[in-house]
Figure (spheres, rainbow, N blue to C red):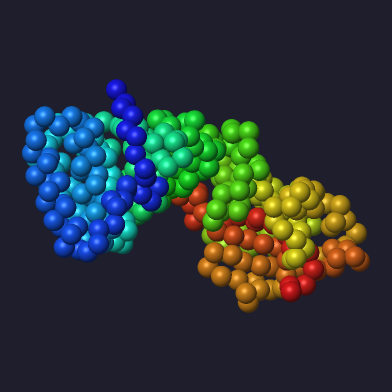
Amino acid sequence: MKKTLFVFVFLLLGFCCFARSSSRTDSRDLQKQLLELMKDDTLGDASHWAILKKIAGSLRAEKDYNSLIVFLTDYVERNPEDQYNAYWLLMTAYVYLEDNAEKMAEYYFDRILKNYNDLMIKDDHGKEQSVHFLCLQHLIRISKTPRNRVLYFNALINRFPADVNKTELYYRLAKEYEKEGSWDQAIKTYKLFLSQDDASTIRIAGDADAYSYAKQLIDFSNSKKDWTFETLEALERAVKQALVSYNSKTLDSYKSKVNFFAMSWKQDENSSNATENFSMKSFMHGNRIHFNDDLDASSTPNEAYLRTWGWSVYINVWYLYFRKVNFPADPEIHGRWEWAGIYFGEKL
C-alpha cells in the first residue's frame, strides 16, 4: 500500500535543506549530535525520518556529495525494513544527477523500481507524486539503451496512463522498438499512436513529422509492395521502356501505391496536394516525351533523379524521383527500389 510522506522536494523532488550553520565545523558537530540522537530507540518513525532528512540536507548544502551518498546508502543497507528507503535512494540518485554522474543515477533509479514499493510524496506545492513515476521520467531521459527505454516507456503507459501523454509515448516507444530491431512491435505501436485522436495534430519535440512518418510506415506495411524493383538499374530501364513505348498504363503501374507525390521543388512533400494521384496518360497523349540517357549527377546510393521533358507547355521538365526502400520490417522488400514521386520544373 502506498504511503504518503510529507516532504519538501529538491530538484523535481528535492531535499529539505537544513538551516545554515555558521561554519563547516558547527555543521559537522551538529551532524554528530543528530547521529547520536538517532540511536534513541524511543524515537518514532516521523522523528527518525526528520533527523535523517536534516543530516542529508546539511551534507547537501555543503555539496559534500561523497559523504552524503555514503551516509544514505549505508543507512539503507543497515536498515532494509525502513519504509522510506525508496525515498533515501531517490535522494541518492538526485545527488548523482547533480554531480553529473548519470550512469550511477540510472543505477539507483532502476534499483528503486525493481526492489522497492512505490511511495507517494508531496512537493513544495502540496502535489502528490509517485517515486516510481519520477524514477521512470528520469530513466527515459538519461538511459541510452533501447531495450531499457522500451521497458520504461511501457511502464509509464501501463502504470500511469492518467499522468502521461499516451499519444507521444506510443510514438516514442515505437521508435525505441525500431532501434532495437523489434519491427513487429514497432508496427503495432505505431498503429496505437495513429489510433489516438490527437495523433495528426500532436507536436513531438525533435520529430516534427511524427504523424506523416508513422502513417507512411503503416500504409507501406499494409500494401502489396508489388511496384518495387530489385535494383535501380531495373527500375530505370523499365520506366524508360514505358516512356519510349508510350505505355501509360504500364508506367502508372510502376508508381508507388503509397505516398506517391507530384510537386514542385519548393513544395512540401506532406502538403495536401503533393500526394494527389493522376494517370500519366493525360500528360503523355499528344506529346513527345524525352529523357536523359543517364541519371542526374546529384543522384546518391539511396536516391536518384531522371530528367525528362516534353510533358506540357506550362511545366515542360519533370524529374522522376527514385529511391531505395527503407523497410527493415520486411527483409525481402528492404533495399529494393521504387518510383516514389515527380518534381516539376528544373532543379533549383
